Amino acid sequence: ETATALREKPLSGPVRVGIPDEYVQSILPAALASFSQRHPETQVTARCDFSVPQLAALRDDKIDLAVVYEGYSEEEVEVLAVDPTVWVTSIAHAQHLRRPLPISIYFSSDWCRDYALHSLDQIGIDYYPAFECDTSGGMRSAVVNGIAVAPIARSSIPPGCRELTDDDGFMTVDNARVVLHRNPAGTSSAIEAMAVTLRDAFCPLADKRAGF
Image (tube, rainbow, N blue to C red):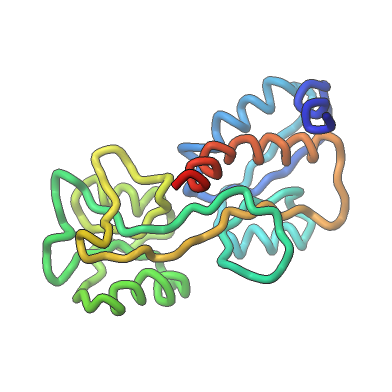
């Protein structure tokens, strides 16, 4: 009942939300636009960044809500969905058949080293960095244009591309959880309504995972 009331009651005030680059072109734009239309008196500010800077912004009271990627932990958190990272290739260009394997990686990324590259090392695939960038959009572009294969969230695989599975000799890079964090400094009705909106936006992804 509370969630329904927050969806329907006109609200006002600022709402600052941090979102991952992976969902800027998929899950979140429509949700944020719908929120602004339902609550025109609110001032929504969206911050697109990686998880670590988002959490730092939350601690520094620069944002109210942060949607971030996290691995498994004992900490009690609100998990919106599980969205594994997988290796992705262009169907037309089939770069996954080349050896050494041309891959796209993030600049100076511990995650790339500890998860993406480690997954290739585990299965004994020789690779080289064919494309380096700092956004998931750059990763997707590298795959679509046949420059390299790339580690991409399963829900963000571009059209014309596909996941590389066990049948292709690849393994899942990680089983990242999409987690919602809140600013401990305080909240408001508008912020709580945004939290409901974000939860609703990820429901299809969460349901798909549950039925997988």
